[in-house]
Amino acid sequence: MKHSHPSSRLAWFQKPVSLLAFVVLAGAVSASVFAQNFPNKPVRMLAGFGAGSGSDVMVRQVSAQMASQLGQAVNVDNKPGTGSAAAVAEMLAAPADGYTIFSADNGVMVYNPALYKKLPYDAAALAPLGVMARAPLMLVTHPGAGFKHVRDMLDKAKTAQPKIAYASPSVGSPFHVAMETFKKRAEVPFVRVPFGSDAAALKDVVAGQVDLAVIDLPSALPHIKSGKLQVLATFANRRVNVAPDAPSVSELGYKDLEAYIWQSLVVPAATPKDVQTRLSNAMQSAMGQNAVRKNLSDNGWEILSSDAGLTSAFIAVDVRVWHKNIKEAGISAD
Image 1: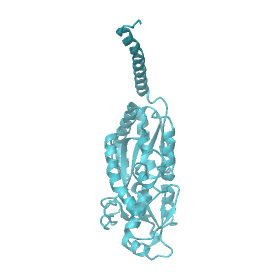
Image 2: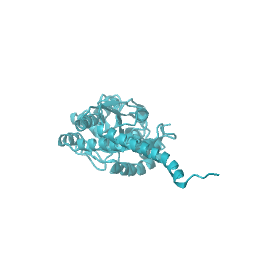
Image 3: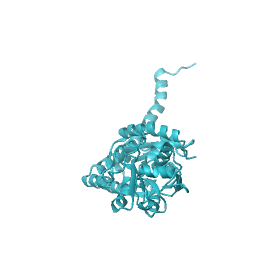
Image 4: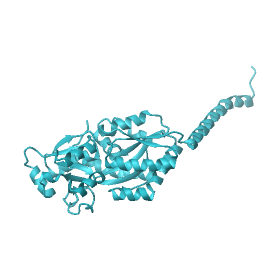
């Protein structure tokens, strides 16, 4: 029998290896070229909140500055409701190329995994780019409700007929979770009145149609200043300047109940790393602009501009506190 020379057998095995190396190298070069050319068309930013809300105003300012950094338009597309699950699913269904991004609040990144037995999207498929800013949540009422202060409201709520109602956007939103947790801790039978967005909920409280709401400070601020809203309590870790007479939830004796609305940017995890870095850098640069920082600060936002690593650590802290709160309050989105 004729045997082939070992060197010829080695050469035979080397052919597919060389081909594989070529394919891998070609893919790496292609991804690198794609990242260098990104973006060459407008970027779509999906948002799970309503147009005109405090988060919407903030994100539109940041997106405009990001557009300057990227050299392409960044268009905000509002998709409120269903705990932002529909907006998340829409982003994940789009190509993972950086042209569809999502402004994700703590409802998406923290609360939903504890609220759904079966999460309507894969949380592991989301890659954070950074947190932009946060704002404290406020318990507000309209002057016609006749509450002198928060303890007066709580005393009346325990026996009021009909029961005192609160306006709330979608189940699983930070506003809904904070109010339901407060309701459980305070042992009062508030009734939830659902709305399609936080802006719609706030509108009916200002109009006196519903007595209470938990809302973010930037959304409430113009109405607080005009006297159309009264702050009963703040979910921040301290009192806020715009309502110095309203106690924090900690002062009321409710520990680990500090609650904020915060907005981050996320993309599908399969998005090329160079593209993720490009978007993250553009976001952080936008947040660093003096005009943006002043405007957001004046309107109740606290700048938290961070990269992906710091965002993951930030999320982990909230998960530890709020998954426990949600479980103890028995809140579910199912």
